Length: 143
Image (tube, rainbow, N blue to C red; front, top):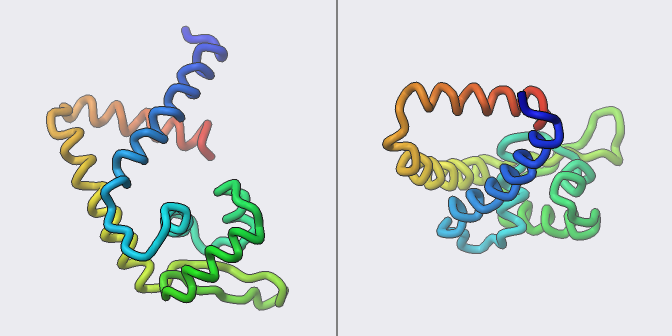
């Protein structure tokens, strides 16, 4: 049975490997007029929306003023939109616009093709084990 320390070391290794995998899967994306930082915000919004500016700032590790500036640029490009909170006028929620959704669908399609190449020789049994491992990670560590 693995100790918590061993699992922690495995987790650190997994996190580093996932950063490399993310880089490899996104490095050839046609970004056109968006920066990697802006892409990261769009990617975040595509899996968790709506979000407030402070939530985006917290998740990306970017200061509030910089987050606000980048979201403003993405809004000007028509890739995301702000909506107000009915009860708190100061609070705004950010979500992808339909154009932003289309852009991220293209990005995820590109990433899906790379993923399919990577798992083309993986057996159904191994895919089931990977799926179970991701489920366990998602429900315990990455919640």
